[in-house]
Amino acid sequence: MTTVPSIDPRTGKTVEIAAKETGTARVDEICAAALAAAGPLEEMGRDGRAALLDDLATALEEHRERIVAVADRETALGAARLNGELTRTCYQLRLFGEVLRDGGYLEAAVDHAGDTPMGPRPDLRRMLVPVGPVAVFGASNFPLAFSVPGGDTASAIAAGSPVVLKAHHSHPATSQLCCEILAAAAAKAGAPAGTFGIVHGLRAGADLAAHPAIRAVGFTGSVAGAKALLAVIEKRPEPIPFYGELSSLNPVVVTPAAAADRAGRIGAEFAASFTLGAGQFCTKPGLAFVPAGPDGDAVVAAAQAAIAEMAPMVMLNAGIAAAYQHSTATDGGGDARRGTPMLFTAEAGDLPPEATGERFGPVSVIARYTGEEDLLAAIATLPPSLTATVHRGPGETALPAELARRFRPHTGRLIFDGYPTGVAVAWAQHHGGPWPATNTQHTSVGATAIRRFLRPVTWQDAPTDLLPAELRDGYDSIPRRIDGVFRARL
Image 1: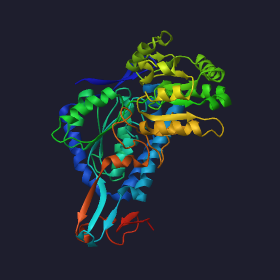
Image 2: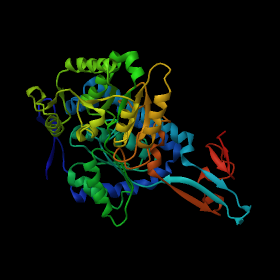
Image 3: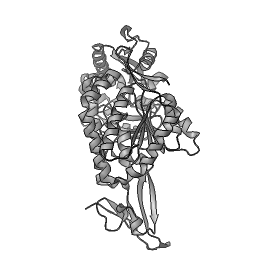
Image 4: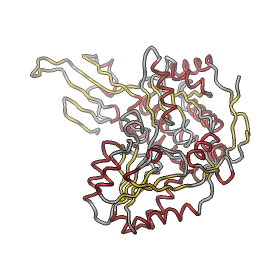
């Protein structure tokens, strides 16, 4: 059986063998265990799963030093970044505990039997229920927040869906460690065996997506990876939902008034944003529109000055580094594992194809525009993205309003006077966008990420003792819509 190496990206050397690739028979065993766990996990109830999520966060925090050390050795992201990412990961686990206790996510509705203009109506009661076991494919660039203990996992467990995790080959030891910590904490909290499982290897990932016990897939990665998994899913006798967060350009517009107001600051902050984490963020701003003329020149000069001070940056793995060096015609300062920060310029009216596609790494393009018509024509050619950003001058509204109107059909988050590299975990967050940003209308970050792993069921004329507690008359612990009237919980 093929082994799975854990490689230090700073040296390119194998440090340990993290696991063995998971064979088809073992994938079947893990998925069967997840299926057996689905009923008991749902039966823990909202309060039980909320307590479980709190316990999972506590367990990760208790192993913080070890998790961060292993993750840094496998990703070279640095202890400061990884400690912050782990804090975020624990926060989002606890947030979904709050989502469960609130109960509004169930979309509970009761329509009592009665007469209507269409005739008699039966008693109808509707709420969302878990879909069943979920496969989660970890991301390369966030070994914690978008991987084994990340948002897909947290929202699936909150929904009541066991999780089978596909470890990313860039950080297999981190993935294995985190899964073992989560599984042990889940068992201690009384969750059923099979609540968490993990597989390693490309073949195992395909087997996982094809397994009949799996009822949905959460994925963060490339368009190519998504298409490969979609091809597997399409061959299933029974297709399942695939929720992919994929590719994003994340355009930024600097209005003439903004450039005149704070050119130096915008240029420096833009450079810091597109090089953050060696430019390996899904929300990295890959293209900025800056006005022609002296004020725009000052923005460009400030950005160029900032990156001139930056050394080549260690990339997540050799494949990402090689792809980056090839696309930018750089050599990482003579190191095959590093990417040299780069800033290119172009004319907004004549953007080359490579300027409008996602490139993983510390590189971006500044496109110079000569007026509002030139700018609006250029943004009309862009692919959809997770985010779009507008920097305004003091009190400026007209052009920003028009830009927001143009961007809104093609993005999931509109940002003003800030930068997209930073996705807060919150009730109002949306991390998604039209293809190729994602292939779904749902978010992968924030409270409503739970919606991906739920499906609606209606009980018609059901006896009270056969109804879920949340749909019984007199239950007032969650928000519900009763006979068309929304009622907040008491």
